[in-house]
Length: 344
Image 1 (spheres, rainbow, N blue to C red):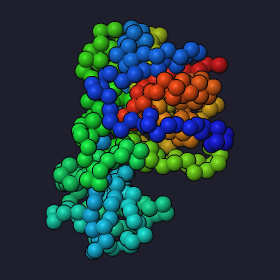
Image 2 (image 1 turned 135 degrees about the vertical axis):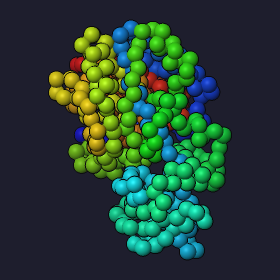
Image 3 (image 1 turned 180 degrees about the vertical axis):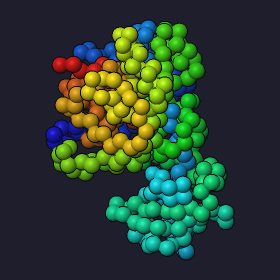
Image 4 (image 1 turned 90 degrees about the horizontal axis):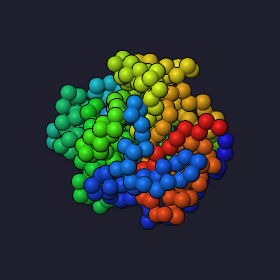
């Protein structure tokens, strides 16, 4: 399909720069054959007892670092772990780096350039791998997407906590699973009181979140792989819900992509551990997910392609037109929509 088919005009003022406070005060657009304006607190009323919410429990690491190679200032963002000590990163300016260079972030925190790829990717080796996460916590900044504007020091309000779900547990993501940002203990309790179950999978959100689609045709786009896990107990719980007639509700595109990667053609979910580069566009035959809670996504993005495949392109274009007209907030800190899978 033509990437131009997924383009739309979005007023800049609708790009959320801070999250709703409290988190569960976000708006919610319910997208079926009709469009219904609601709030995220209405989510329990839009689900049925016996359904299951599937969350991504990945934890965003403060992976953006500022350092020096000699007199040159270098900024790197870790995005994929190769070995305990080696990470692929995006570096700026990468052209100033060569193999063997040392980048110093602090007196007790430095690395060496091991390899380079096109597009600014640089493989860095950290000397003390066992202390890496502690050093990131001390010196790193949250890797906010470029459409969230901050001062040069990268500090604004509570991004360290705002850009993290309340159930984040497994360290490794460089972007938040943003549909999960809307949940509070109170909303989770209301969902449970409705008789809706919950479970967790892990997908470490990676480079693909930040990389634009630069080709003209979706067939030519190559997705970056991301590491994920569905354990045996989680697969069994979800399969049991499906067998009992309940609906599988993916909270976010990351949960959906992992579930679809781990499901077979008959709709049975299997344990999964490894990388997935699944790229979902209109025409994809969904195997397991019945509903999807997600934020509003960028034009021409793989995420807008995914939701168009899930709910139908015509439905999503109408939904986004409505959201723009009604001044919903878009992107990571924005509002949400609940999508029903298009079966036409």
